[in-house]
Image (cartoon, rainbow, N blue to C red; front, side):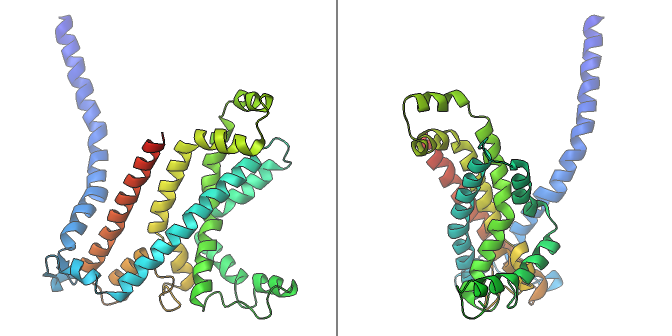
Length: 298
């Protein structure tokens, strides 16, 4: 009798468990796995809708002969190489400063630094465009200080346009990474630093030989997430350049190029899917290298 009752209860919980799991599996399969498989199939075609034709690996061959794709790839890797290290180091420095008990108004500074990443992207873009306009506050301030003679063409010169995008990304997402570092710093046992001070270890050596090694998991996490975010860079470029990636494609990224291939230029869903898998491959390779490097250091 007891065994039969326990068997019925087990079947009851199994059925109810599946009733909870199946809807989630259906949603994941519909909105995650199906798009992945569908985009992979599309990468072997060219065109859109009823006009699509099978081209095999022709889209891959087209990548190496497409100057716009090569420009978008170069721009994306440039943003990655410059912006990610700057943002990671700046977030760590700000977190270290906010972790100091001697700093006044820490809550106010923490909120101010974190605010851009939770603010409306439209409002953020409008504010940024007004600040860096020809007659904006940035150029006016630099001229009043005597640092420049004529306004900097932030939106029309390729060099300054790239720098503007890097500033926009760093300003928006540094606070996000800072929160992780601040939480990690606050969880480090203070007795470690007390022992180091007793031994006469300078603060800069404490930071380099104690703080940094204990923050390696957080550094790895923020590096990977920042790398993925930069490779998928779209919002800031789209809003600041109105979707053009200009001037002269100097700020065009892979994600914006995929958008243009799908919705703005003559639509080519197959080629856009192929470009999207370039991002997937780069993310996979860089994530593997970062995990491998972290394991070797450990």
